[in-house]
Image 1 (tube, rainbow, N blue to C red):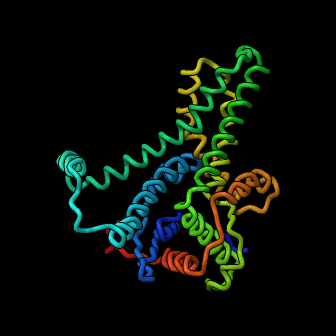
Image 2: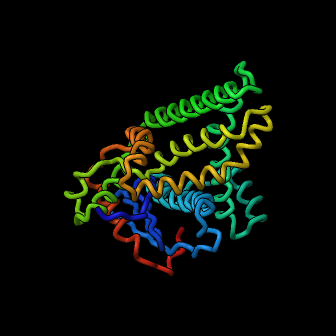
Image 3: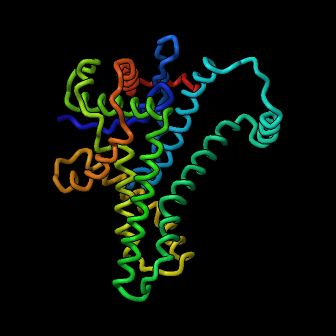
Length: 314
């Protein structure tokens, strides 16, 4: 079976596909037309080629590209469902005037980077710092090896529970259903390509909605690596614990992305075992897509290797 590094992200009525050299986005409008936009990826610097280090850089870059693509897809919904003649509120005018003066033409880029940083802070706070704070309330002996192990095990258990609850609760939201369906279409299309089948709706339809390189699997891998790595740092007061975890997060992300990348290409059973919980979690973050969603996924995938240097829409 052919392996590929191409991955994607579900958007609002569309999909983003990212290849080694460029990205492509496909969005279906309400009239049925599929809008395609592609652009090249920026060239990697030397740091982005170093194993583990490149993982932290790559994660941030993917989040920035993902937010840009999400905003791009949302524009079509706004244009088709919103009232284009409606006047912006006073608050919207104030924000535009205030930050427009500060950032000028870079206002949209500033909003994107702020959104990414805010998302990172939310995820680190919810899944890394909060579990540590809650585990620190337990009455174990911080000076003993057994106590340290118990603290880290309960911290990991709390982290996994919060993650599971977050995924399960968001999956029940009505508006998320089509997002998860597009997510399933992305995985099916990549599977079809990796099995060297022609990318047709009929061929894509028969493949699984679960894929080992999914972001859900990455998040679960982060959980496992963080438990193992934080276990060797000991257990201190809550503030020192949080500082240690914050400082080690780039390393955790880097190791996790390297493992996920290798697991996606390897047939070793050990990696399949490590990836099994993440694959199981994908039953909450993917759904069976309809044929129209598969068509969008195929359109995005087919354009992922096409460069369009004149495109600057997103």
